[in-house]
Figure (cartoon, rainbow, N blue to C red):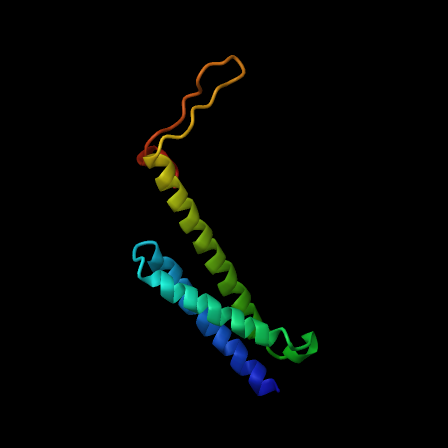
Length: 118
């Protein structure tokens, strides 16, 4: 049983590393999106298999679990950064609704992609 857990954890680490690379490249290459979706599905299957085990079964795998936690956090940060980048691009391309203050005057907002903080 320990060999199977070890194999699953190693597979999950590989999928997380592949996911990280794909998250980075999908922002510039839309062909990578299908590969990323496939990796995410594979990762979900591995996690589903791992969910069948008890917490005690993972004793001795702390290093791998810490690596999985770290890679998961990196991937989440990259994905959030990509989403924010895309949102900033859309808001700079399309007019945002004007905002008014309590006196009824239009608030000045920064327009354009280069005026925004990234």
